[in-house]
Length: 210
Image (cartoon, rainbow, N blue to C red):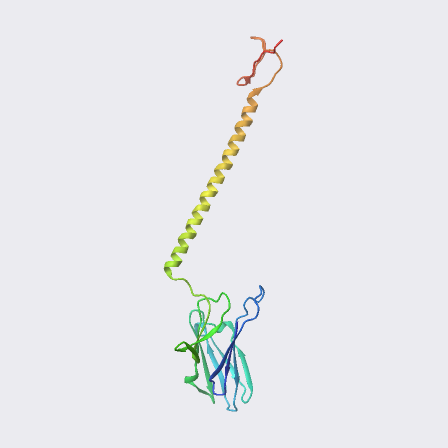
C-alpha cells in the first residue's frame, strides 16, 4: 500500500491517500510511506523522523517548492511509534508532530489510517496507525507450541513404526533365505544307510505312483 500524506505549507495534514497496486510475488505488497509538502518561502525548513531504537533521518525542505519524501523501512518502528517532527525557521512546531503506530509485523497491505474519530467520522489529525498483524497473546502462542510438539511426537512415532516394519521385512527375508537353504530337492531314491544326507537339511520323501 502506498500511503501518501499531503501537507500544506503550515504542516497540516490535508489529505491521506492509500493506493494499492496489484499484488505480485516479486514486489509483494509494495508498502511505502510518503510525505508531500508544498513549502512556503520560510528558510531553514526540515523534517526529523525518529524510528526504531532512536534511529533518525533528517529531510531538508526546499522553500517555495513542492517536496516529496519517502520514509525508509529503517524508520518503521514495528510494535511501536514512529515520530515525525517538523521545523520551520529552525524552530520545532510541536503541535504539528505526527505519530504513526506500527503493528508487530506487516504481512500484507499496510494501509495507514487516522486514529481521530468522532461519532464514527474519521478526521485527519496527528495520530495514525498502520494496519498489519499483531502477535497472538501468550495463551494462544502456548496452544500453538503444544500443537507443534504433538505433531512432532506423532511424526516420531510414525518414523519408529516405519523403522520397525523395515526391520520385520528384513528379518522375514532372511528367514525365507535360511529356510530355502535348508530344503534339498532330489529325484534320487533314498536308501537307508547308503544315500548321503546333508546334516540339518529337510528332505521331502514321496512315492511315485506306478
